[in-house]
Image 1: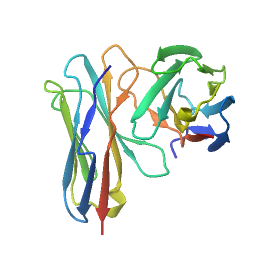
Image 2: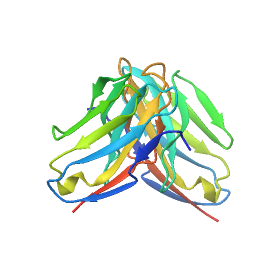
Image 3: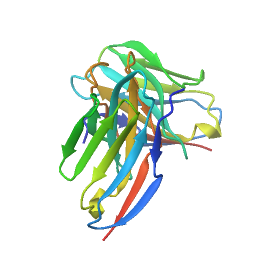
Image 4: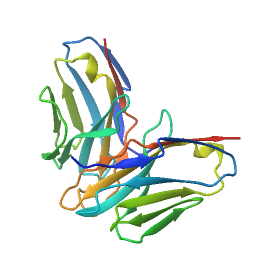
Length: 114
Length: 112
């Protein structure tokens, strides 16, 4: 158990809908990262937050947005869902975005868009 | 776009065999190389963070080496056991960035 929690574990929804994925980092970790794992793709970095502020952006679609709250939990919002958004979404956390700190991964949310 | 390649894509060995896989990454602007182990239905688990050229790290039967000048890292498993079956991921972190670019992984299956 990494100490990172994600809810829900599974989500099934229809095209065009909007969903929110939630992540709570390990106690003491200030940085949160979101990744997408699709079929035949490696883990794709989406976005990073540090202490409530956006720190880095990766291959995140405009239909997707995220935020990190004062209690350091983070939410990833996915809207106007398409079939191709079906994937495993991971959240990871680290103490701080520096010095080679390990990222600790949550159990993931499996999103299925039908 | 950073290119992080892992080979082989998959590997099937017998219990007791030793094995190794490769991670290739850009040789310029290096900051750190991470190795993760990802078992099916679980989350990726950190194995090593390597930062110095020539680094060698060990955890039990698993070890890793790093060559930043030529842009590769090897992961070795000595005397593979069925519980070593997992996907092994490497991730490259360039200098000046806090994000990781992952390879697609090497899927290892160890048969009893």
